[in-house]
Length: 155
Image (cartoon, rainbow, N blue to C red; front, side, top):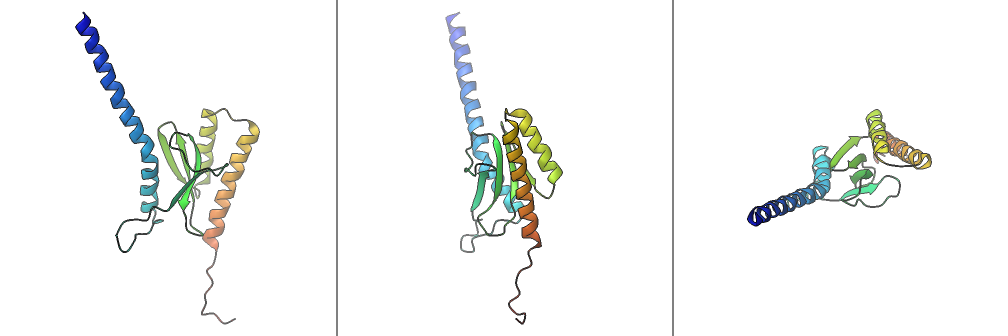
């Protein structure tokens, strides 16, 4: 009987260690997920000398502008540290990570409301998130329609 109880505790211990490793792997994958997404979108450039992609990404909380903490659920701005680069919205909820293009505003707002439903946020905080999402969308639109100055034009 004692051997069986010991065996059960040992199996439970091994399972809990295995789950801990999987959880840590999921937490680490936030940056990896963001890097893969930005590479796929052509937002990151390769370093010509190494052939590797620059990892100059920015992931900041939408409202507070705090850099992402792998343990924190939230709504984040995702982009690169280059001027006039496009920014995306990253939603992290539990172990689910969604990256949404702001061009799809209805999808962004729907994900934001899904986030609201999972959190206890007051009306004022919710309205700030909505305002920031609208500002991010507007900023991307403004950056997209900017016409670069052609230095060859006459003054």
